[in-house]
Image 1 (cartoon, rainbow, N blue to C red):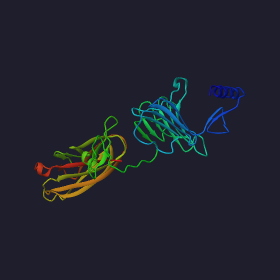
Image 2 (cartoon, rainbow, N blue to C red):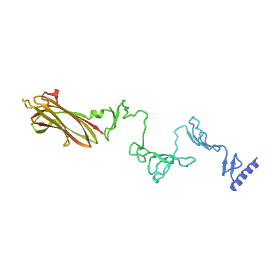
Image 3 (cartoon, rainbow, N blue to C red):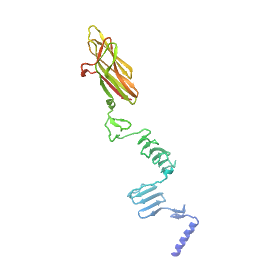
Image 4 (cartoon, rainbow, N blue to C red):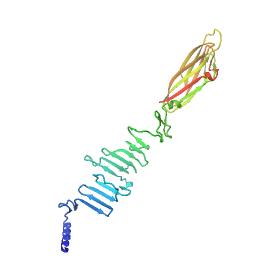
Length: 326
């Protein structure tokens, strides 16, 4: 037996010295050391196995208690936390990542960390290794955006199939999203909330306009500021009181809408002297961004005319303004 052992050892040394291959479980080794079948390297609970027939590498640091998915080319298993570490010198401009390929391309998709265009961030690529999604180092996620400027920056269509919660509020049926400015979170509001908040009414006071003169009615004026284009629906009701006289005929009263110094539209009514009338009208005005004003100008013809209701609150003269943003 001792002689045989020395002979085998000498034979192996001779084969290695001649540059020939050594095969285990094969008569035609394809490499310097060629093993056909499974082999195991390591200790009792921490070891590595490699199946040369299937090409599966299994690294074990304990047991996870489940059978690995098959087929898997690489399995890392542990009874504790398990990580896959990819280390590179990002300060020198080197990235790290996982590359996915197929029969058409050896880099069809990838997950890349530390690319020079996304330092300390992730790039998610597919379909020819094109960048589709980016998570930058500030936690901003860009979909079809390579340089996101917001926490979620989407270039393209977006579909939501479940409830949308604003500050944990899912809203109620029929409500719409309202912007509360660049520094505040949006909120759910009624679909008519814009009209509710942008509708106002002012009341006028009594004024007597001499014949063939014009005066603005006190109180029937309104100023407002809008950030963008808007339409304003204006309605008014003003009581007209001509003088009481015999054989004086009718008095002519006119109300004119004046906005930003421009005379827009006039409303005229003939009222028998000694009688009372109500002059009403409405008008739709288109405005651009900025601060605007609206006034009601009263004109009397032929006789002095009193505009307004001396009877008190029951017959108050009013002007209602509805600002409708574009």
